[in-house]
Length: 316
Ligand code: PGA
Image (cartoon, rainbow, N blue to C red; front, side, top):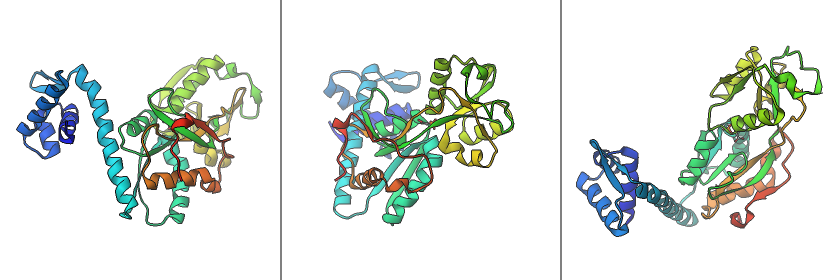
């Protein structure tokens, strides 16, 4: 089994054709076909099948492709770690869920780069589902987001509080009430983030647990658009306090202190449970753990919690 064969399998899965895979890998089509055929022979099961003019992975191929991605990702990590250790300069690859990428990570990164000038950094921002996928596919070493998923080989550490609050327009009739009955928010239009968003998932759980029945639901795929819509009176929403602190202070949004809120959540730094971290990622993790990242305005630090600490990488 060779890395070339593993790459060919993943390229075929992505492109849906031998030609597309060959173009993506910058090799010839026979080389891709031969690699897949050899790999299938070695495993003793067909990994691809023809569909019309294209080709797709069989169930066995899909199953094996998950491992192939991990093998290649781990090898890539090893290469980067070795180069970093030899002083070749590291590349800190971060991912962040939308809310963290917009409001939490930028000041942390600014603080980190003040103490580590010249560090090469890339940040991929997407919703919770895509961020978890980036970690699993080894496209990022660390991710900032909500708690780790229950399954899937991802562990994490809470590093900062992330209260979620219900907000409405500045003239909302419930804006001065305290601890009011959640039922009073039934019949409202609730603005929800897109499917795959962690905030959306939390909102759905909150609505169900509080017995709130929205009058209607509006899907809006960005925190910024939701805030604007709420401030213009289009509805109410549950959102991270980090995302609305400025608008609340400026009186553009009103906090609705419904019973059961704020929801006490944390921001977590997430990583693959079994994969060692390259030096630059270990340095960033140490920075987060040190509390220096909390020098910025924001909610008080989270009580330190770890998930599956057995797999927590050391940041010596
Ligand atoms: P989101 O994630 O920005 O995708 O909603 C927030 C979270 O996971 O807490």
